[in-house]
Length: 166
Image (cartoon, rainbow, N blue to C red; front, top):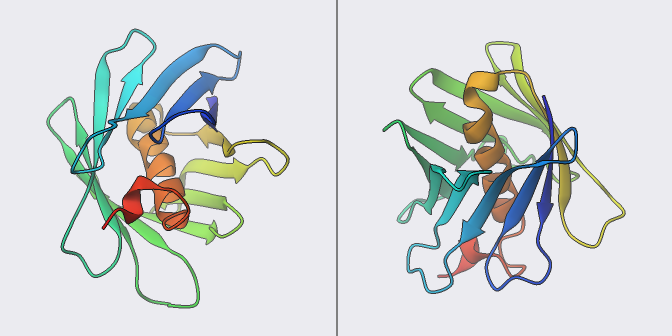
């Protein structure tokens, strides 16, 4: 399934709308204006909360937790090595997922043991950050979309992103 994640331009918090391949609103991610933990919530089209995105503090490198409605927890962290590239890992109930590709240009894949779970591509000529996401593991759609939002937040830290609020 294909999705388009589009950051809202005129928003006081990091907010995203997510459309399916037919242009219908499938999900939304909204941050809280006065939140100490700089959290966001990913909800489906009916407004049911699926994933809470919370920044993990007291870590050497940026990390965020995904708290899912089913009670599972996923941890997304930036890897230190190799230091000349930008790599992330996702640790969850199903094991470890690897995020690789050209993260600076926002062209990357999410894999688990060579199984492609999602492919992400950024639109270059748009007013706000817009990503095309092909999901190949529909059972993890909400978590994979939340992971793309987390990576956007971490890659833009220091550029008006709530991840860099210390």
